[in-house]
Amino acid sequence: MDPLTHYALGAAVAGLLTSKNSDMRAPACGALAGALPDIDIIPTLFLGPMSQLDIHRGFTHSLLFAALISPLLGFILYRFDAKRAFPRSFTSWMFIVLLGILSHILLDCFTSYGTRIFLPFSDYRAAWGTIAVVDPLFSIPIVASAFSLFLFKHDQKVKIRVFAAGLILGLFYLAATAANKVHVDSVFRHSLADQDIRFSRLMTTPMPFANFLWVGIAEGDEFYFTGYYSNLDRTTVIRFEKERKNHEYLSDLSGYSQIQKLISFAKDFYTIEPEKDTLIFNDLRYGSLAAGSEGKKQYMFSYTITNHRGKLEIFRRMHTRFSPDKILILFKRIAGEK
Image (cartoon, rainbow, N blue to C red; front, side):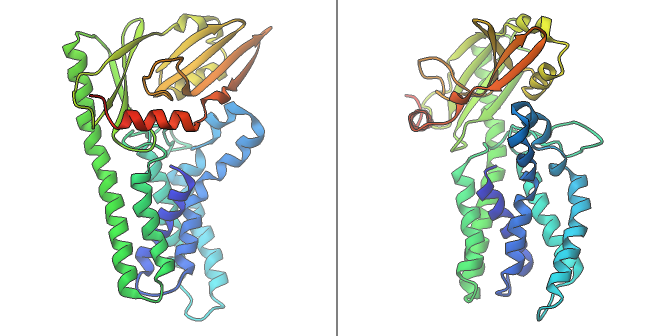
């Protein structure tokens, strides 16, 4: 999820332990703990695009990291706090840090990006795919809940009511995304069956900004069938586009570890486009930024692969970033098709 949501959820979780007093130390530390796992982004700024696949949502997002770092940071906070009036216990500080970190790890599991929570024992990515990495409908009540701890710290009744309402609404919405995914999966499967499209695997992922718009990718023998469905559509008949896999273009490069990392990251949902002396690797899981509208597809995760006499150069295509016109297209598609 986005950093602001992680900060807010960490503060809100810490607020569960301190909602009956006006002490802001715990929510502030909870906010920092809620964002702590994303420190793994720092080395990726210097190590190139492939490092993000290796490092981000790696060990700092694991349960072992949470178990190891929480007592250490809890002890440091306890030592600093011991000199103040009414200090908290070591156990209290440890749980504030632990719950903040766990809130981050658990929330990331609900996205499609994947979080390797069992490192270093397993490289398995927990990716439940019920919510997008940016979803204001979830973030706004969580942020409101966290800010209530600071804005109404001297009015306990108002603080507790706003805090509880925001946290409950946010968690209810998160649970609703899981129920919605079950519904959306059913819609895609029925539409594929009605159109007699045979497939071996189906993956559905929510598009950014709201849980109403989903992309579905069904894998056939030579093609992927990609379609978009909004809960606001007036029909459950989904228009699917055929996209040729072109996986054979990677046959000579299959021995390179970088290629295997890309394939693993995309969970085998990818296409290859030959373009002059380069290959374009498109991760299909997050759909096209144009959300099915006409025009050249631009994927959220798309890479250029160039082979210079046995040395691979891989770069993420920068045009895949969001722009105002692409956001407008998304919102129009979220509003539904007639």
